[in-house]
Amino acid sequence: MTTEAATLDLPVAQGDEDRYRLRLGPQHPATHGVLRVDLELDGETILDCVPQVGYLHRGFEKLAEHRTYAQNLVLTDRLDYIAAMANNVGYCEAVEKLLAIEVPERAQFLRVMVCEMSRISSHLLWLATHALDIGAMTVFLYCFREREVLLELFAELCGARLTTTYTRLGGVRQDVSHAIMMKLERFVDAFPACIEEYETLIDTNRIWLKRTIGVGRVSAEKAVDLCLTGASLRGSGVDYDIRKHRPYAAYDQMEFEIPLGETGDTYARYRCRMEELRQSNYILKQCIEKLPPGPILGSDAPDLVMPAKPGRKVEVETPARSDLIKLIEDRDVYMEGDVYVATEVPKGELGFYFISDSMGRPYRMHIRSPSFLHIGALASLGRGVMIADLIAIIGTLDVVLGECDR
Amino acid sequence: MEPIRIAEEIEKKFPCSVLGICEHKGQVSVVVDRSDIVAMCQFLKSGHKMNHLNCLCGVDNLTRKGKYIERFEVIYQLYSIENHISLRLKAQIRDSAHPIIDSITSLWTGADWLERETYDLVGIMFNNHPNLKRILTPEDWQGHPLRKDYVLRGDTEWQGLEELKEKSRKLRRFDFHSAHVKQGAASDDD
Image (cartoon, rainbow over all chains, first blue to last red; front, side, top):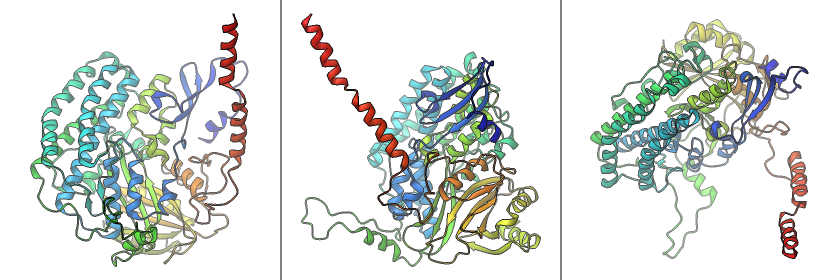
């Protein structure tokens, strides 16, 4: 990348009128957030493509070092803000491994349930915006119709549509009501027909096929080399899904398949994600059937100290920051060490690497976010294609900048 | 093959640079010196099919309570998609004034951005990296935020801030409201 990156700082050679520079973004609707791509073009062909990120950098990793494990949970909502549930689960799985906290079975099933709900809602948003970028407006409206149902369910479950903070260390925050389960069951029954509906809109659409088949082709070796994960990797035929490879929560009790693509182009990744929608729906169905009774929070879950209720005379003041830290510090299971735990979020592999030095807060928290690596791969995928195809490639990699910039 | 066996194999193959093997919560890490890191990753990638680079990050151990060897280390988390095995390498960097380590971008193109991020946030340099520039913070940012001695509070501000304030002051001088009122008054007279 050195030579290519350097060329963008130098002026264009005189007399070469076809060569010019374009800064795509950071406010461009097709870049899915604040992504800037510096392009050098020859006519409409991209000679060089340099993605620039960092516009949404909020320093989560630094911030996390100054907050307790329980407090850091809210930061994960703001990573991939369209699949916050999956991030919550990923964070809690990692901390529970570090602190050796047991999670009751019902909570594990509920985690799988919300994970798959967020996978469906994330994939629906991906399909909606991806199709919109390519020029199919109707799909957008159809997808948002179903996504709305899921977001309403999230709101009913935990009070928020996007920033959910639903899980807790050692379980989940709220149990599901009968009404929620009934609504979810209705959704699960109706959803397969909806997927078919989306497919009738674009599967036999000549424009869609021309814009996706053969575009952004990645071979299996190349995809592994670029550290792609999730459907972007499986579209190239590499069988890597953490839900199967290293099952977490209750995924080992679920029956599902991992759809694989063959050609590794935009169309293959589209097919993979459409199949994943069906599989997620199937997992949701099993969750509803198998959901076991029992507690939703483990007995050894670290306590969250809440301020007293407003109506009552307050005798105990809101606990000081140091007390919150102490609550976790007192646990004898709390020890030195480091863990890396990854979960399969809708975008790919979300990993948390923790180093603990037994102080009640992470000494170091590294977030391995799939979008960061996917945007990194854009430099090599975007070279030599047309501008319009670059837009399709950004869409097919399914990136979200909140997660990339952290 | 068990991860611990692979770790022992590395120790046999690179006896001078392996400093220790530890297991925590079922995850095996090999603590190594920085010198042979590329050869070691190459050995794991081709010899044990550890083809997936999960994670690469830098750590500053300045204020760490507990055992550590050097101030700076780089963590490599590798995974074999075929054999379902993961292994962690912790490369220790001796020189804490100018931390530098060889880049593994020749093995994984994806490591490019991960190493740039490590350079940007922790300030560890990478030899033979094609484009080692800041990535998440602005180009004129000073210091490396994830270092433990990074100043969080103080009187000094980011240099670019003054420039930015000056720019906004200049923009504020153009008074949209009074310009509009004047124009309106002129039309009333007509």
